[in-house]
Length: 352
Image 1 (cartoon, rainbow, N blue to C red):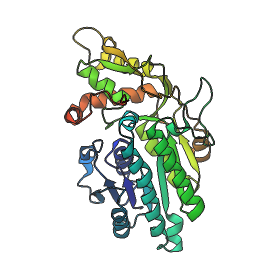
Image 2 (image 1 turned 180 degrees about the horizontal axis):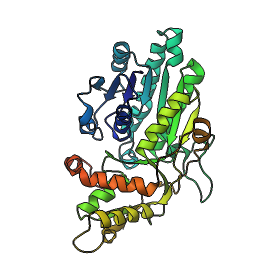
Image 3 (image 1 turned 90 degrees about the vertical axis):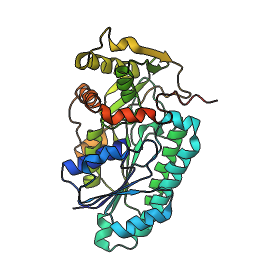
Image 4 (image 1 turned 45 degrees about the horizontal axis):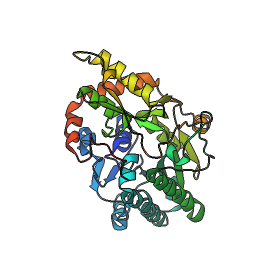
């Protein structure tokens, strides 16, 4: 069984990936390195914190010594790099944090992983993998037609997507220049349990349950391709198992929806599962000033990972969305404390 070093494992996608590994008995040792910024939450992993093969380390990927020590002590076979600042609105207000974590942190992790690789024997080198989890936002905005391919040119629009594009280029450079065995993935918008309440779907659910206005940027016609987080975890493991070193894989579920469609669907699910005393949840929808540089449409073509690795999503978008809404209804003790954190519930990304 493999030893995994997972960066950002207390965040949304990272914690779900760890749950997926453990629930499916797919790992040996799991080492979770997380800085514990506002979006990192140890409660995401409270059910497995006593798991004998799970190790949590609070630390920063911007610290080379921390990374070096972990590699020496735990000797991972696989590095899974989730750690990133990821909220576009926050990147508009405070871009420096995004540059440091997403670019400098990735640089440090690549450098130290490559130095570690040199110490391994040939068999260990053949087994070692570094997988970098990135976003479709690096490709910029699509028109009414077409989808992102792995060969699509990068055209980032926000400080967040620019920082992730930079990290992607570094990952490719470390493979081409130093021979580091990397796999790069670019995913569409994730949703599911444990998502911090600043992203669209948890914001809609929580605002609705709190009887607060449900904000929609602009006219709500921006289109995103939605991916359930467990399907993403499954795709990442397939990429690690079957993917070719140096290759990139787009991960998306071909679930294009306008933001307004997503919000209305969430409201309809809530109307059925948890009706309001009066009226419908859609009555709370409020249109607000659009985000600067808001990309019009994202859509991923997942043909490569589907055809080469055999990846398939689980069930429909609507089924997974209802599962997600039910999770937030059942786990209010998880999200209620988060509402008191700085910036939560406040509009961001509109500083001039």
